[in-house]
Image 1 (cartoon, helix red, strand yellow):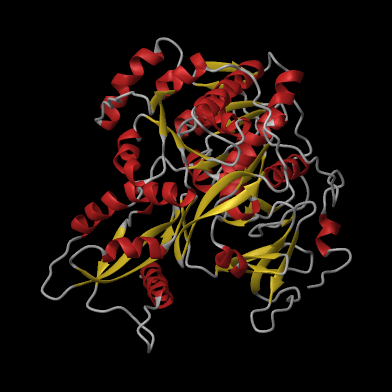
Image 2 (cartoon, rainbow, N blue to C red):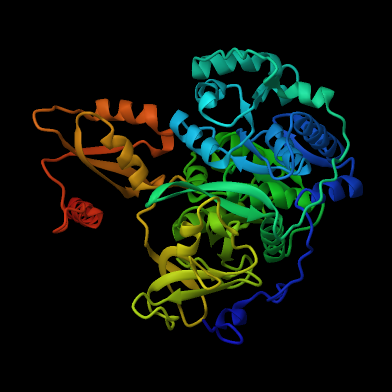
Length: 566
């Protein structure tokens, strides 16, 4: 497939951003080693009063690498990390890479069936997890290839006296006091740091071919798939991000890390870029508007990558005017569409710039963004990053569509994944020559700015999380009283979208929303559980019996339209 010699979007490129760059072929973890060499005493991470220098962070990552190797990890083995944003998650991530392992990021909200699928599919040999999720991991461990589990607690990196108080707070908030039975296959994270030797295993890495990460993404046609991202994919995307944010000063930025590291967006635009550019990563384990506002003011945050729901939560906080947010230079919003009114309000409150970007797990993740300090277009996902091309595929002919015509967004660039783990057929299905087919429907305007108009897949984006209807429907069908089920996303003022389930009960069966919700919570992560339920006698179908989700969506849109007119 041919593209223009000079893409139209280059006329809108910031002067400081080159259309093409040279990328070093090196491992991702080598940047931590370099930062520790250049700035050993600089603060690398700040976590609720605890501070780690680059020397300390590097030392602890090497200790973890040494212990992983002693537990049998060899190059190419998979190490799963199931942690909230903490220093341990950064140490574990880079420690696994130093050991030559492939990281498998696992959402701490996952329930047993989701954990089991991911562990079985990836063949992970070791899991590093929080004590709070340990019971879930332990309950499925026998069904997986996990040989060792390493357990840590948020309190492990809290300063005195917070570390003493935390267990009581944890029990009050969760009702749980987790007891871990340590043995020859279950280890304390702190013991790894104590017993490990801070020596680089010096595993030889081929950046363009060796995987750094298996990042799982859902799908409408089956279970979650492991996206294979190489060291080169991740290094390239981090360098592209740094170039796009050309006013970023090496060694002088303080980056707020509240986007979860287990999400590829938070991993790349917060953690990896911070390590690569000797910045300070200010870590928060969860999003709370008050905590974020206090942190921005106290820690003088300069860069704040986030999701639209975060910015919505902040601008709607009644006390936002009490905080000094003027340190913020720029924010890259991702994971969901950014409303223009949210963008405008946030910028007026902070004086910084907030722009929308676009990408997928399969693109490491960012492929395009609006310029930060130059002309941008509200409602647009922006223009392609350096060395990246976007095009619109005409569904009817398989050719590139002209400006203004809607088709499927295709992406080509050095950050595009190697493929899906163990799924060659699925990999082949999403590539047309060397173009990755995104599944998103959109168009390009005359200036080279791209817009998304719909999702080819029926994916729901709620609070920045990608949710796939089929996965929820399969769980609902397991309920003995459910005959048919269909799931769609409906607009939500805070989450962007929320999940609604339409259910047809079996004959002579009475079902309630409470009963279905309780069942769903046992089998799905909390963010996937439907928030709305509607029980019907039948669902709209095609002539061959396929349920028409689109009709349900149109019915919901018509219902909201009438409610507004009333």
